Image (tube, rainbow, N blue to C red; front, top):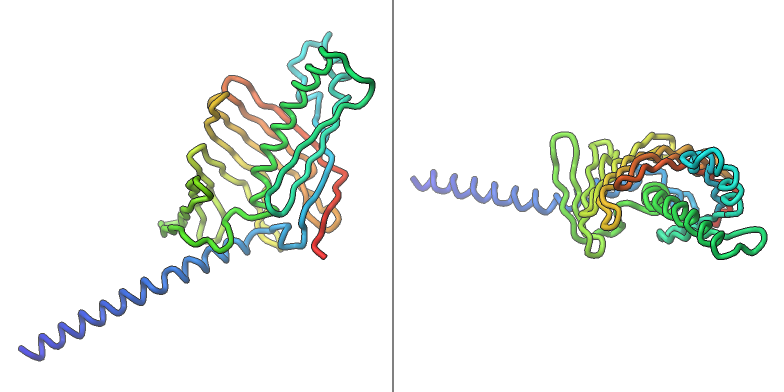
Length: 261
């Protein structure tokens, strides 16, 4: 009887120790998985890029295709007076600007140009907000103190807070991110892999905007080697914002890169 009790005690103690060890090892294993995920992406900041500036040229023929044939030439002449630029840094800062070239416009012309420019500014900013975490800065913050990592059949699901916003990231076992979700909506990246890691080639977004309502977007990104870095050269956005169709195309060129010394 004593021998049996002793065996039960040893078995219980062993199971308890194994349980404690398993719990002690899990955070380290989880952190390694997150580190490996970060390292699996071709982040330009890891390649020495600290920031960049570029010119952006919208395809006005695409943007103004709904304008009637009689009004289109005047609309194109007006649109061609706009010049756009973007600036992004390795901390996630995004700045999109536009300027008007040529003679000083009258009030009516200025209002028309401003309305054109606002839509383009928003489209460029929206693209950069999706592109930057995957390709320049990070999607999963470094030194993430509090998080939950669930292990499902084919993927792992990471949950953490970015400020006051809860973020959920679905990650496949090969570290490919399948979906990023916040209370505002979700984005599904389209990724390809090269020698430096995963590269963003497009995405599908679905979110709720308090002003326009449901926003659905599909993006295609064509990137080319530029000054030793793989940078976007052409971006196509299609979808809808509420009842308004989105059909936007832009070319990005004249890059000025800031590299780490």
